[in-house]
Image 1 (tube, rainbow, N blue to C red):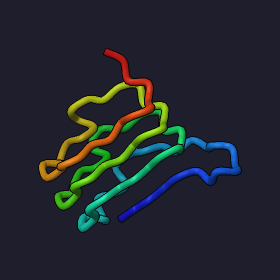
Image 2 (cartoon, rainbow, N blue to C red):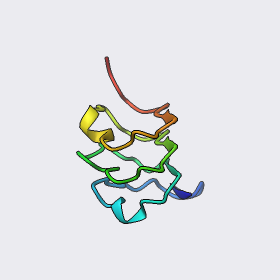
Image 3 (spheres, rainbow, N blue to C red):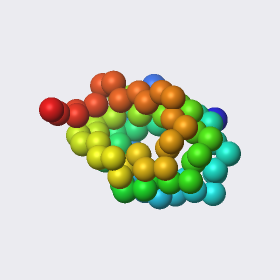
Image 4 (tube, one colour):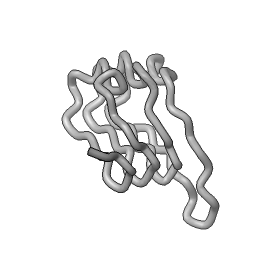
Length: 87
């Protein structure tokens, strides 16, 4: 389990996501919350074949493309609440 979040008493800084998780291929859960994430890059989660839960709530994500989630065939839960994703 990997959890990245902003402390309650501090200003949120921006976390940028790119294809950095591949060495963590046994990861089952990732929680990146309150981190001002503006976007997810192509193949960011590639190689995380055991990932079951991806929680990206309370960020500033505006767009999700299939290439952003490529390689997550085993994903059971995706949480994107409290972002800015439009229709």
